[in-house]
Length: 157
Image 1 (tube, helix red, strand yellow):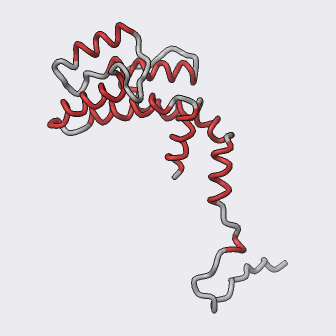
Image 2 (image 1 turned 180 degrees about the vertical axis):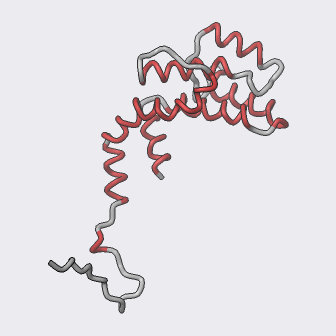
């Protein structure tokens, strides 16, 4: 539920497509070898093609390298585009220079934690989620109503 709410929040901020693109690239990187051409085509159609429904903004040099690479699909063909999108998100989140590919997976969540997630925690969407999730203890029903609530004894003086 919380992840779906966060994605809804990111959609309102126009950041959800970047996160979805990142996840699709991770699926390509770690997914089944036999599905690589299918996944590459799906990523292209969804995020990079002219008129794509969830278009992500990458620079022309990165797009050229990516388009050249998808002619012979492999699991690392989207790395340049993924790095570019990561750097855009990182620039917004931290305003610092980038990291190497090995650190990207570990650093995406801290990036969200520093940028989008704090705004999500302050949003009305999150407050509504909390209001629905919190159940005051007095409204909870006991499974066995005949059992008494145990009292805590205080230490003797």
